[in-house]
Image (cartoon, rainbow, N blue to C red; front, top):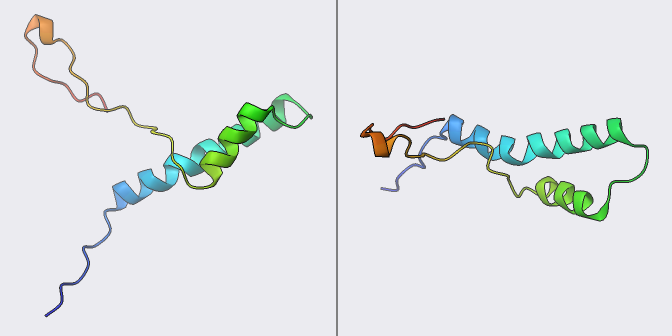
Length: 77
């Protein structure tokens, strides 16, 4: 018997899409509101990179806060 694939984890799938779609659309909107000229090469490269599906990490990783004061690890996101 073959195993059926695991159902999609919607929070992970949403993060994966938002990781590239949100920066892609936002960077373009902000630049168009700022200038009528084409974006500079570095910004254009970033827009093209996220537009090709390479996400930016929009969520902060787990961090250890307050360890010096004896506070347990806190997840900030």
